[in-house]
Image (cartoon, helix red, strand yellow):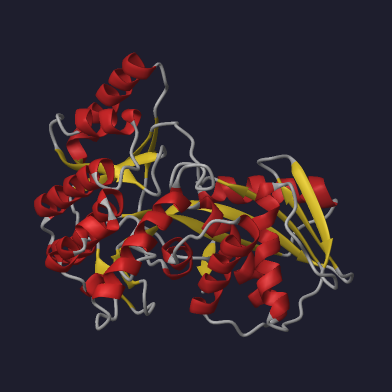
Length: 394
């Protein structure tokens, strides 16, 4: 898969710029095993990079222009690195301009580049193609122009890009996963301090399979920012009452109940879900490291219930998909994954049952909604790397 993507991107570069690229970079998408919407609430998340990537073919130039060719959109964009940049009408461009803007404002200097890129990360499916795009570009600028950025700084630059030029107040998880991913390991990330530790993904005999509802979402229109406002309202009232608490995750359910009337039922439900989800992440990390796949599956199911009924970011299609998947032999867990309002479910399925489950759910989903479900079998992989001579070079 990687070789095919790399060759395809090289050919796109050659067609766009009439020359060969000098360097190749791969930036992965990510899955999140558990811990949805807690990355902006002082919580823990449990993501991993996956073997689906944006490939960048890159060549340094002697001028002051950076030119992009987005093969998948058949679209190009150029800008002058000596000028101040502002958001433009092409959405995909803003993820990249935002990265440049953060670096430019920090006083670091970059030069001209030609970049062609293509992706095997399905867009709008909750696999964080945007974070791969942002952090891949930041990583490239760091490598080629010796900006001396560390991995955390690259992740934060990606997040700032999304905040400022795209208008989505995302947490740090997606960018962090793309940069810090390790093969066969999940990352337990403290989204407050950015401290993290790796846990072995001990799911021998089971696979993580994504079912794409093909209900496309964008966080800008999906209610993501609305959920943020609900949560922020709840937090404000909690801290007014319990000012001694330092982090949201340290509020107790008893404290939450004390201010339930004051914050209102909507904010209460949002905060109730978040506090439960943060605790589930710690349990899931332990279950993974111990190979307790049955308990991991139970936790995934609890998360889906919370996302659907308490945080209310599911939809009829995904609720149907999860409910039907859980009826199948060999399925231990299933839940909506990502920001919500569409995208994928993540499913923990016994290897020997995967093909049967895929076939059954594809048929049921087609009959119920007249939509062809897409399926992504994923493996946990390394984070952003440069690709050279058929080897990853860190």
